[in-house]
Length: 204
Image (cartoon, rainbow, N blue to C red; front, side, top):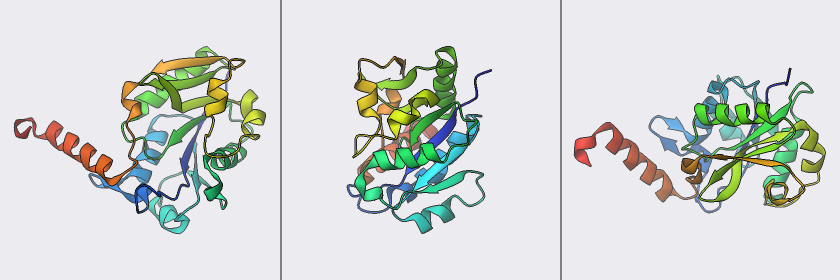
């Protein structure tokens, strides 16, 4: 039996473009960070490791009451690859793979993560990546056999080099809505307007 993936939720960034801790921006009554952690757990995978770095004290309190494992990246300024490595190293030995999720992927839900996990079970050993707008990226499932290569990553490209490596077997799952993330306050305002129109269609 193939061990279920763990979610590695990356939330260590300094939110330079956002201008304030992006992870704490709210949509409805929930911060982006808390929403992402809840989505990870609702996907019914094996568990969730949240990697924190910048603003760690405030973000840790935001996760209060949510049963996730927290890992710290004190060198978060060196790029997302370091956070990915720390998240991988925090996984239990029983983890069959890491499903990498970004805290600002606000359009991704539990069903999407479950779909990626199912694709990984069907093709064990392969990378399973989201394809949105013709581009491969996260959320993505990295099998345990790839963890050694992940530990060699550096900089701010994350696992992108692995996804582009023609020597790697990559399975693409079409999730067009995953292309939307919250890089700037305007992105959050846009999503709030969309949700408001969905609740009140006559106001659109």
